[in-house]
Length: 295
Image (cartoon, rainbow, N blue to C red):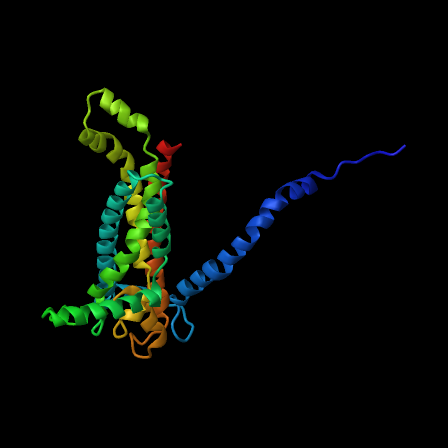
């Protein structure tokens, strides 16, 4: 007589979970190799000096006036572009709400927003240089009309010049992130408001506004983080000086004179990571509140 023996419990568990584990393995390896390990190495490098000795001097240098000024410039650019992008993007979403979701115009706007939200870096910088640079075709055309947009200085290659390129990709990103929340408003809420004698104003102020507020603020934080961490567009436009934090990190890595410490780049990266963690925590908390009424 043969006795059938069942496989050990541990072996059955491995067999049952192995497909999902295998599916996540490539992504987990990607995050580990190209995000987690470089981040840890960058942060740890800020805790050592050029001779490899542990020091907190690099971290303390984050509070130097010139570094604080750099962080303030990054905050200013990120805040302005995030607010403008969020307001303009929300208005575009409101306009799209009245269109046929399956219509050609709505599909074209959705597709354009998806593409333009990723259109950044050197290509975007070149587009603005060719358009409104010193010899851009719009600049030359306006100069022929007696209008000099650079009469007070070449602002395009300074921190204020980052506002237009950043807003260019912030508005499409807002459309992508905020439109699903706006589409999630239930028609029954508007009908109940009308049945109780409410107006369109009371609907947006007392119902839709409070419901959409967490999603709007979450999208605003996402836009701020997107601008705060952008590098390629700023690097292509601003070739001299380190006026925002990503450019300050570049200067610390490749310059032999800036601050005299190449490991300062690690301390600057640590400062950016702390800010990004706070922003992502706030975004996650607001998204959790948003999903409550969407379920």
